[in-house]
Amino acid sequence: MSEAGATKPKKGGKKKASSASAAKDEAPQPMPPFKPGKLTHYDRQVVDYVRTATAKNIWYYRDRLSTPRGPCSLPVLREAWTQGVIDANTLVWGQGLADWLPIKNVRTLVPQIRTVEVQIATWVKKTFALKPALARARKERAEQRPQPNNQVDIMY
Image (cartoon, rainbow, N blue to C red; front, side):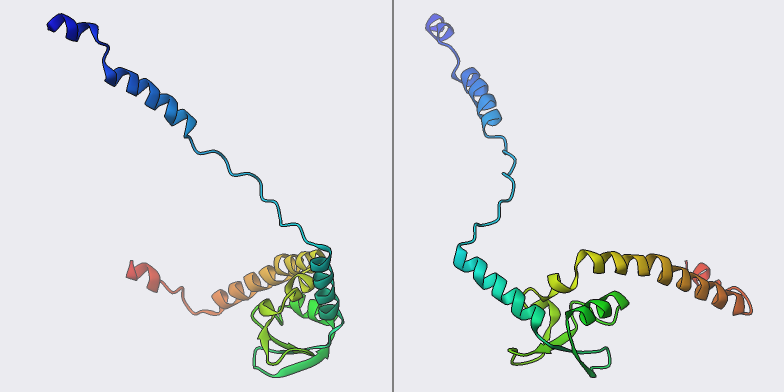
């Protein structure tokens, strides 16, 4: 019997080899690149209509103090975005809307306001106007203090 047991191949050895090749076959495959859904002609017409209606609409917005401002067109909203007066959470109202809504909830309005030019202008303003002005103000305030405040150093 010992001879018969010795002549039979071990099943465990084959399983290890097959499981190793199966692991190679089952390795996670990279996701295919994202492909946007294809729009039908009707869907394109609807999107174009919404974009046109949004662009031609006269808008009102509520500033930080919740005061209604307007009427204003899309270029005025772009300038307000660049100046930091409005953002995606600012409430707007226009013809066809039942109530004041955040800009981010009005379909196609954010992409029409935040064009590449507006994004570049906003970045330039923040980088070259606001940051140096804030640094100057902080430096002036530090110089006006009678003595350095080491409260944070004492705490830690």
